[in-house]
Image (cartoon, helix red, strand yellow):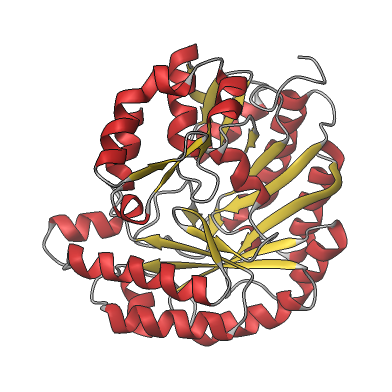
Length: 383
């Protein structure tokens, strides 16, 4: 692959997965494991072997994201080992961004010092809610006050930090969501990810829903929650730049911008997805299988898919439409995909523009405010 290959072929970002958790949250559908901390050092061995095999040589990137699981479930020594491996194989460009996810209950000063010393410059804290009963409904194992304690730790060490919140939790109402936003804004974040709860098939929360043990928030109430977060954060200077993400100008997540442009990225670790040279792969989510295959010198890759030109173009359009302010620029889309946007999805654009879900100024198309509420419908039509 040429060093000057375009960003949808040459990865300029990397995702590294750390699967360990103290507890598996009821809504979580990620490749995460509780009660497996004894495998951490063996996992780090395998992760470095996989990285060396996939990359072949150190690969300079603009963005690194270490997610989970709970990366800060590792102890300080293990975090130092992980960050050292990442620095060796994934040197960050000048001005690049390195994010690590953290649980408020597992981040302490010693771990934060390790991350800061390694060059991590952004921490994403999984707050989810400030209401004890809603944290219990989500099966989160941290207390509301631990969020403020964690923010105090990161604020002095990292130039960028973010909080994750979830709305539409069973048993919640608009007043609860208002209280969560009040508590969040009082901490002064520069970035927020606010997700409507999804009952992912197979999760503990989904099983509770199937058994009638939880009552989902009514659709109209969830719409009001989404409307509230858009308005409240905009008035606080946090602009909506993607369907679920808000930031002060210049504090957008660099790594996630790669995803929404459908650019290439490396994926390393249990269950990690990768998109390189048009080939999309996903590692096995089975920890014993991952370890055994890597230790045997084999690939841990499971499902893979090579998108054809039109499939790639449609997927790119779908992902780009998630970007609220940028949307899809017609010239940029043609440069990236080789397809004329109107020839590809012209009838879809016309129909949804007529319905008030898309705005089209001739140069670019974007979701309207109403279109944000019905984004899934629009994005499905694009694909």
